[in-house]
Length: 394
Image (cartoon, rainbow, N blue to C red; front, side):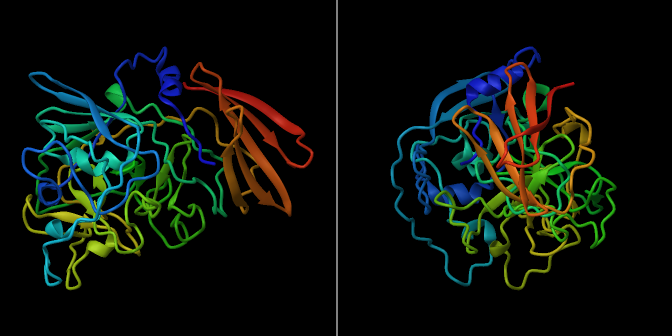
C-alpha cells in the first residue's frame, strides 16, 4: 500500500504556515510533442499510453488574470485512450517529434499562458494546481511519489518520506523561456536540480559534501530504493537518478519510453534515456542541441544520471526548501534492508526494515498541527515501542 496524503491533509499542513494558496505544479514540455497529440482548437489530448485505473485528468476551472492563469485538475472516472500511430519514420532523429508515449486524461486542457509545458505533468496530478506568469511555470506539491517508496534501500540514513510544504513562496519555479549559455554552471552541492513529472525533487548524484566519488554515489552504494529515490535530512523524498517508476499504466516506461521525465531548474526538459539518438554526442551537461529551441538533456544509465551541469540560467533562490523537522537519528543501523512502507487503516505509516534477522519499524502519523508522531519499534513481532517522539516543523 502506498502512502497517500489527501488535499485535506495538505490543508492541515498549511494551517498556520501562512501558505494559503492552493497546490500547484510546474514544468515544461516542448510544443512539438503536444502538437502531435492533439487536434487544433480541441480541448482534449489523446495519447498512446493507458491512464491509470481511477485516473481522469480534467480542467475543472480556468481563471485568467492580467499576469497569471491557473487551472485545477482532479481525479474522476477513467476512459481508455486509444493508441496514436506515429507519423515519424524510424530514421527520424528529431527526438522532440518522435515522442508519442504519453498518458493524459482525455479531458485535460493545457493551461493558457503556460506554453503547454504543464502537459508533461498531467498524468500525475492528484489533484494539483499549475500556474504561470510570463516568466515561470509554478509547481506546488507535497513532494510525495505515488509509487512505492524506500523499499530496497540497503544503506539507510534513518529518514522517512514526509509530505513537504512546497507551496506559495516555497513552490517550484521553472523558467518558461530558458537561456542558452556557452559556459555552464555546476549542479553539485546545490540541492534539487530538477523536478520529475510526478512532482518529486531530483538531486545531483552526490551526498551532502557535494563531492562525487564512486564510494559516495548514492545509487552505487545502496542508498536508493527500487525507483531511484530516498529520503534526505529533511525527511524529504527525492531521486538521485532519473526516476524509473514513472511507468505502470500511466506511461509506457518499459525501456522504450521516449518522453520527458523531468525538467531541470534552468528550464530545459530531461528526456528518458531511450529517447537519445543512437549517434548522439552529448555535451558535458548530458545535453544535445545548439539553440534554446532544440536543446534538451537526456537521462543516462551511468553518472551523472540526469543533467550533469546547467546549460541555462540557474538561480538557487528558485529552489524549494525542505528544512529538517528533527535531528539526525543517532544509532540507527546503516546496513539494513527496507522491506515495506505502508499505511494502516488508522492512517499510520509503517516503514519496516531488516537488521540482524529481526524486522524493526519506524511508524509515523501527522497529528494535524504541522507535527508528526513517531514510534520506534525494535521488533515488530512484539510491537514494543522503544521510543516515541513528536516532531514539528521549525
